[in-house]
Image 1 (cartoon, rainbow, N blue to C red):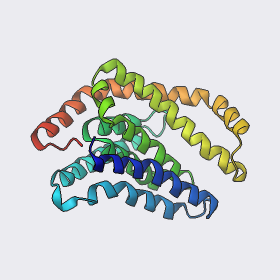
Image 2 (cartoon, rainbow, N blue to C red; image 1 turned 60 degrees about the vertical axis):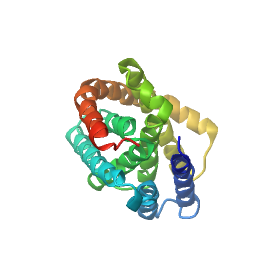
Image 3 (tube, one colour; image 1 turned 45 degrees about the vertical axis):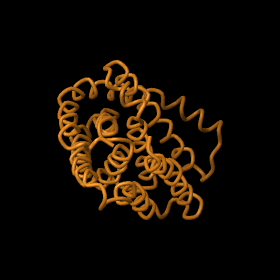
Image 4 (cartoon, rainbow, N blue to C red; image 1 turned 180 degrees about the vertical axis):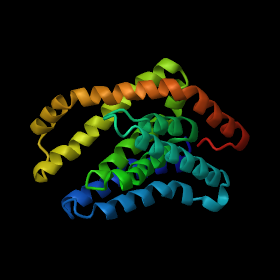
Length: 229
């Protein structure tokens, strides 16, 4: 892993949580639009850092835009079915084939753009981070190779469903009185188990359906244009 990539991952995994913490502590979640915009800007930094020196970044951004559009559209289409959305599966594939930075950006943009329809709120930065981290982890060098194996990919889909639910439960606890209590968090996780199971199952279903046709197209783009980070 290059030094640039390591710094990008550090920025995303540390910088974004600090922004969310600032929104909770300083603004009491009342400036969530500002925090959401700041997260988008931070997520874009890896691409703009050496923008003029690396043409593949522009091509990657185009594919990220397409993946985000698919995720947003999919969330709209399956809106009537609670907990059953293709967003996480598309974010995972973006990370697998485009790299950690692109995976995080796809997840963050999918959340903030789709919430223009579903409703923005203090939960939006948490959704951006949750989906972003799922894409970032899927794009880690050692994991990208493993995820090409179907059953490992499906297992990661289950893990992603659990991770998303657990991260969003943090916001649920904070939204109660502005503080975090471990006991309350554990109760919330336990009560949300049916929803967590639904998230995980939907990820498995969508990954099973789209990993081959969409994955093959992304792989061809990697070979032709070298866009995989």
